[in-house]
Length: 127
Image (cartoon, rainbow, N blue to C red; front, side, top):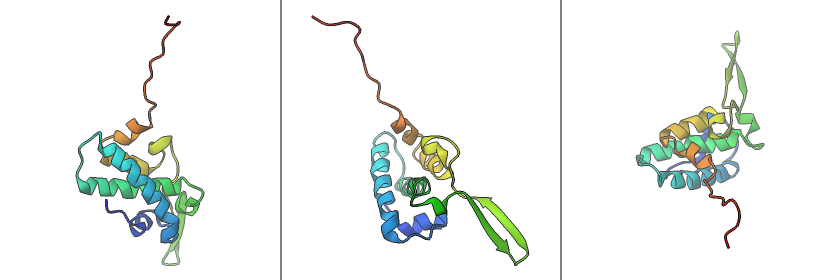
């Protein structure tokens, strides 16, 4: 999989250095590999999903707080512009735009991984 800290910085606007972002990429790679066992997607989609999932993990962590929420900038020293970064909106992978994109790129398999595995419980005892 091809996913670099620079790719994650590009979509989040983060100023964190590589060692701070690397753990999020490693986690995302593991999850994307697991999800890829359930669906057939191109390597390009897996790469983009990894970048977006890494960004999701970053902006939902304490480390990446500066990469989420409202961004403010001044245009031509005249206009103040505010725009929404990747902050949380819902639950799980769908709580950020980054997680939502990663899930879409993986054909919905990330959300499926979040669901608990079904279990069978017997009522009574077996003698």
